[in-house]
Image 1: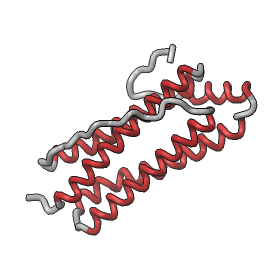
Image 2: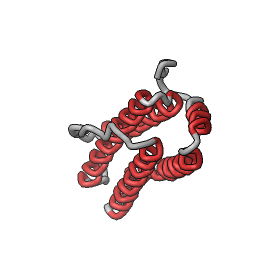
Image 3: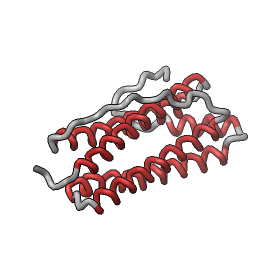
Image 4: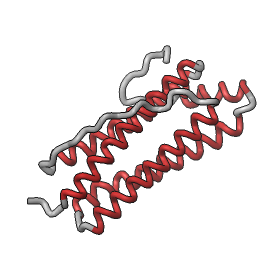
Length: 173
């Protein structure tokens, strides 16, 4: 039997749900951007959704490799309407901040439980969240700078559209 506790594996299962919730949230944000004719932001959020999905799969495969059950929960409907692009990016930052808090709590719990294999796995997610929060903060700051200038907002939208995707995104996004 592995030294990691069932309580730690349960918390990792909860994080899989959080990552899938983030995937769904970013898909909704991408869709909102498409409806509002911001194809670059739509592509960026679609790529972000793909990244969150990959995070969920990374945790899922970790549990499978440890011989544990993966308990998938129902994903709730995400927010689909936003008052503005600023509101959208504020929601994205809030989502990343909450995810960081979750990862830190699981990491700390795993460490306290002496579940060192899980601690090692979770270190990657901890580093990833530093990057995710910094990116979200920067994105929001840039959006706020140009929010009242339609031409500048369209230029920023175009700049966001250069982000590479794991899976192809149609040009009509």
